[in-house]
Length: 305
Image (cartoon, rainbow, N blue to C red):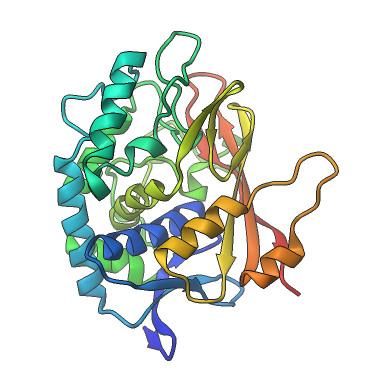
């Protein structure tokens, strides 16, 4: 759908972390082709992404597929990597160094790992948005998602409400992935009665969108932009804005919106001046067994009056 402001991506809701990351992925994929497209959100009860100037859905999908192909041949998701990214310090430095020299195709690397940020086992402590654990191997799953997604799946997921047609892999960024046993008619772990269904186009876009969220080493562990709290019980906050913004401007907005600590309050006056209309928040939850991550239900924590 198009309006005077651009192409409305009716399948990418800004109140769902997956939809938000997917919209960032659309802009990142267009930026890789040197297309200075701007991104903003509708001011509806469920906000949706808008790219301007207008661009056809098939053209957007082609840009995403081209970016996916470059990323698959780049260092951030290299086939030879430890699929769980459990790298020791010398290999972390080598990994990040290769990524810095690879341009856009390596941008995801510093959003997954930070140099000298290690877990108790002496290997890389990943981004707070790394939700895979156990038999779920991030690199393998991300490569599969990017290599198998089709133009039709991308167009379908950005054009209309998600239908969850696939049982292919998911990196668990959809808010519906947080499936509480008490609210489910069938055991969420029972794949035969309650299979995990996904939207492959949105999943592929969100992997590209994750490249807008770098992480950093700190004494308390790996810090991820937009995230706060502990590894087991954290918070993810993200802005929605009404003024069309370039990729660089969006990067600035993402870096400035954080959850307040202590007696701090939300920076309402700043947010209004920057064109931000809402700030959303979801809990980051990890299972006690295995450490699988999910997003809790999103909610509005600040809204422009």
